[in-house]
Length: 415
Image: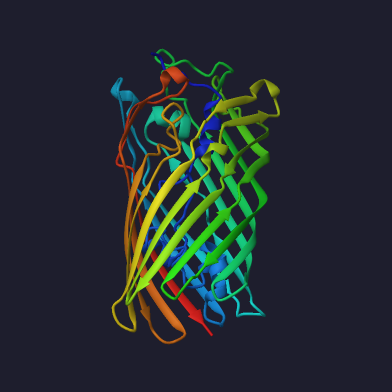
């Protein structure tokens, strides 16, 4: 079956994201969450509690708590082996990122606690710059998200608390296609006469989060958290079209599109026995919100809607802490993360698959006020062999070697 190139290739890039978790969500936002593969909700005890389980702020020590984490993220080069001619094979670029986060929790004010977090909760990128077939659909796909989340908790008793917060998201996107080098004798050219496109845009959107925490005794803790869906509407994007006959004669126009930052529901329980703490977390990400994607141009003749039909996905996380001595705490984690991307809509912008996560870390208590540590996480993506040409896709082969490596440095301080 012949593979076709179309102006609609651009819209598929708005699924672009990370090789970190299902879809383009980034759960690991702090030292402890990296060290425990994201199993850091019911067991959260530092200032990152304001993000992962704001209701848990009610049970923290009555003091100011600060925490900052700097994470280095490395994405491997994904390999694509097409079932057809070797000219369709490809290898994505290796990518490296720096992800800073910040958290703060207030002292107790008549059973109220206040918190604030700054995190890159969604995003990252995928680039195929060296191979002409993948590059035709995803030369560059970048989505940067910055989330600011003030929260407040209220403690009803020594056993139960609730919390809520406001989520402010700023998102910035850059997406490019480049099918210029594809042979028109083997592949159909863009029927509208455009060879390549670039779209940039940004938006600010709002949402909320809720949490409740039940602490029946000093050993057990149960937490339930919810982060709302936020639609990222890029209404005033800038589109550049490069005509097939003369790519140098660029055509500029306005464009708009959107995609969801999906809701997440998480249940977590933590149990402490002597020097050990275990955290079991189940989270459900509601990717089914992503039914289709519409791209609207200033020229209505170019408007396009593409089916995505993503599925809700579940992640199972298990984390453990061991207090080696009064100053040193060891941490570890493992998780299994389902992909939301169905085979009939998978593309080069996000060749996602089910993943296994393995992690570890250590915290050192320098003093009663200061603690710091380091954590590592390895995210292994299973290989995936798909053929969606009959469904209007562009994949007929196997994706392999998709993985990510995180190295996080964190410091917390209280007074």
